[in-house]
Amino acid sequence: MDSWLTLLFIVLIVTGWFRLRSSWALFATGVLLLPYLTLSGGSAGFVSMSRFNLVSFPLFVVMADVGLRAKWLLIGVIGLFSAALFMNAALFARRIGLDKAGIAVPSKDKLPGVVDTLISPVRAGELDDMFAQASKQRVMPNPKK
Image (cartoon, rainbow, N blue to C red; front, side, top):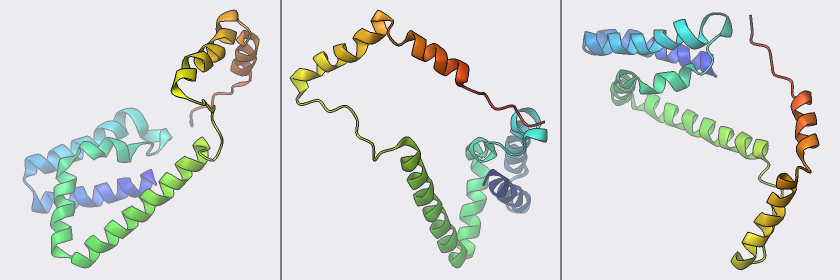
């Protein structure tokens, strides 16, 4: 997804060079190139480029200008982004497991007792072995080379 949005940002920057002030287009170009050349580019690909380019306000000015000139494109982009928002929200909800039950507390006055019940094994060190074993099993992914 980041690769496609980066391609969109490049197209918007090229369009911006013809429709915006040169200082704004230069700013948008810098916002695109800075993370690519320093953080996420090169062998890492386009990781988080969409997040980094959200601060590039000239791109949004160009998108608004194009949207006002072609209403059909504006409606299509809004529909596409709405579908992407729904899809990502559904994937996020599935990943964090919203269907799983949490800790049931009968009433607010019982909450301090439940919290103390959860904290006491941690303070007693009963979970230290489990945490140590889990940290040894955790495998950190190697960065792409």
